[in-house]
Length: 627
Image (cartoon, rainbow, N blue to C red; front, side, top):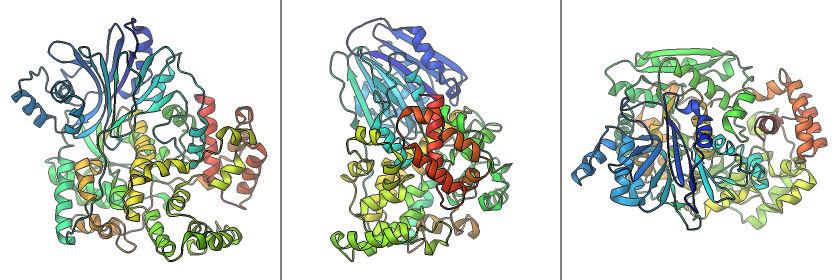
């Protein structure tokens, strides 16, 4: 895995400041500590930080074609590069290395911007073609690898693997985007294509950007999407097909010239990946798990069951649940506000894995593709009620019930009906937005200052989902899976894993995000994914012969940390000092009186405001460390 950076003068052939390009590249040294590469010619400069995985001796970047007219800097893995190399050689292309990077330059020569449709893997790259004075940026289909860019006032386009690469350029304006702030407090991250800064953008997954010198900057172009088109298939046939496809997706990700292993959380997804790895490997699989010293958050016993069954070389590290000392570290890693608290154990498991391996396979993507989240089940239950009454009747009826029903955070889940009643008063899309929101619409309205609400000019974060819903499939389950592919998977999950792994120079590969597997899963009938109350139905049935029942069918735990307890206990004073301090007051974004009320009510145990408070805490850490 690697880091890429570049400067492209879209107007003229001015010399590139190589010292500045080098400084931008150096900000991501953690992504590729093995080698540094830098190339500049009038009007363009490319830089690279390498983490050596394949073709250790000759895979240096930037990498060029035969006559030096095409150069690429690349972050990721193209798993089908041997087949592409054979095809391109048959078409007359000459290769000097045995690495996947060189496939990109020859594929560009052969197929132009359609080359990305031929690649199977995770990738973000910048390619320069001198002959047509074109810079080509591309990002993989599922958004596993990140790519940031910005057009500066002087006509320079800068790009990099992390936002810190762009902020290292003195001409990038640090003005925050009000809409990005609204979106952050709704989702817990800033969704693509925005960043926290107005001038910088994320290239969306499955998009390319082709910039020709002397022409205006175009909009990114989509080259792929998931098509939900259910077809008739029996459960036994679906199970057999799933097993074959998962095995193949794992197999192509075992190619490595450095130590390789897997995360093993004890959940269904990582356990299935490890099971397939064990069947495909001649040597015991290296696995690692993080355990917690509080049973309610500890899955390590289930990971141990799988490790014992497949005789893996298993490493377990138990960490204290009061592992909150990473707040500033995470703020610096993510470069913009990011509030998923599971970033803490993810950081620790990557830290642990790096002690043993350089490449680790993970189970990320299984919940989105095979409908594993609890919220999918609740959404479908609510949909059945929503379909009984028109919105014009539901909105006043359930709206009134939702307003008057107490918010019983302390009660058993069946008695906590306030959110369900509120969801029934909404449209399907509005209800799903409410279910995924870190800070609800009503709470954001109270949280933001009057002046900031005026600056938003009525903009609401639900517009992110509305934009993607225009291309969503009809079936309500497929529709929310589509929304999660576009938002949560890329903006939360992939962002979390990329930054946490790269902080430790660890490459993570995700077989459950293999686009061939994802495309096939989209042809399954929805009831083979969510069957009654059982999510990932066909997945679990297919793995029954390979995994213990208590791993497959126990309640989903997630990678959780005890936020509510932290903020009433060891983080109590730190949270109060941070959220009532100078940075928060001076930014002018917040109603400071309401923040004080939230802290009081949470710390006295009257209400559970742990998620909004943590979201604020991570925003304050961003202000101190980055803004």
